[in-house]
Length: 68
Image 1 (tube, rainbow, N blue to C red):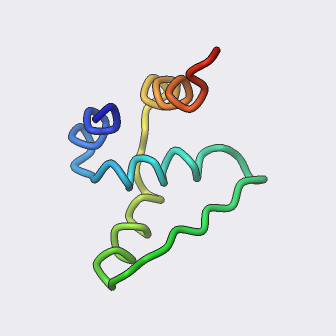
Image 2: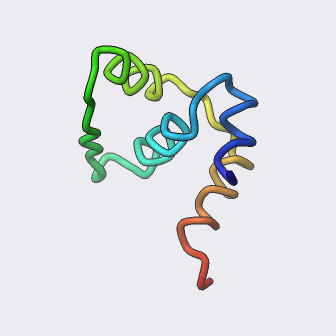
């Protein structure tokens, strides 16, 4: 997947990358991820510490706005 490249670079899951991207959208954005298990909760919390690069953020931004 297109999220797989940054996920592998950070030793994370694609879901963690997506959550990390969402969290970096600004203080006006609130992410409310669901979780079905304690393991998912740990993954969700860890996503907040992912240090996505500016290039990775730009790539993910472009995926979010495919029509532009």
